[in-house]
Image 1: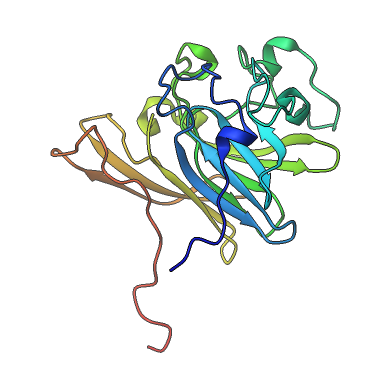
Image 2: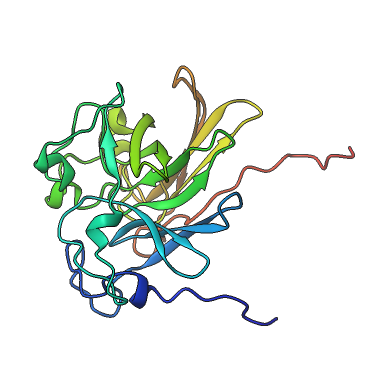
Length: 245
């Protein structure tokens, strides 16, 4: 088929930004995309930059990432004006510079680090797999999580609504790859760290009740031959039987 649309991230972002990576050739590392049909916009996860929402004509709507050192885009846009303002649970702005820049967490808000698999939910929220690699620029504390954000495009704000994984620490940590899905039929989240090293290379798929965070189903998939420690990049839940049986 024909290419009908391209987004040149060298124009919309700052390809010289080296906060999370010093690799000039892989300065963004796109690893996931969601389409916002209502806004005709795309949400792109860049592992070593953050999560960015772009219009069809490649203009940045917002950036979901620590505020540190964004600078100017290739097209001259001041990217600092595109950074989302985090809110606490009372919808009040979080203003601590150390939180905004990613050096510490707020008790009710944390940025996603080296994230994968952005998904828009039926509730209008954004679900992301927060890998947690290089968290706070020092890799501590060690955990990955599924995290849900409520983003207001007009007000340029972000509020953290839900998370799972922090409490499990290194047992579900995956610095790379991984996936997260929401299943509205059961109101469950499936949290899938794809390159875990606890008890040897493995990947895990963990389905949790959204309301209670109780584990509904959990499986560990050992992979002694894992290359780079990767057991899987993505997992999808499928019915055992076709719909007509």
